[in-house]
Length: 115
Image (cartoon, rainbow, N blue to C red; front, side, top):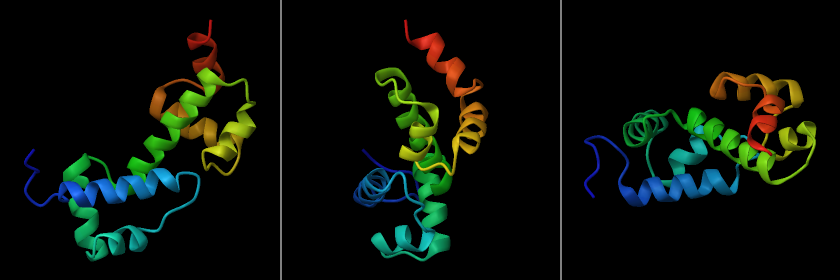
């Protein structure tokens, strides 16, 4: 499949997203991601956004929320545990980020999806 002009090559995108997924709870520096594919930070940032539609930080935040959603559905873990497991500073930070991306608080989201 051809990639967008100026975007990361498919192998570069796979390498970076695999790294981000493997290190999801940790903060990953832009310099680390750029080094994985031998690009400058500025070029990497533009190419990542061209490939995914999201800045690297936004992509990682979205992945954290998706993982949290899976935990909310498939576990009975308290919100504070899910927050830490998905890389948020605390339950309040998790709640703000979750609501901003999903439109619901984590507790409400869980209640509406778990029957």
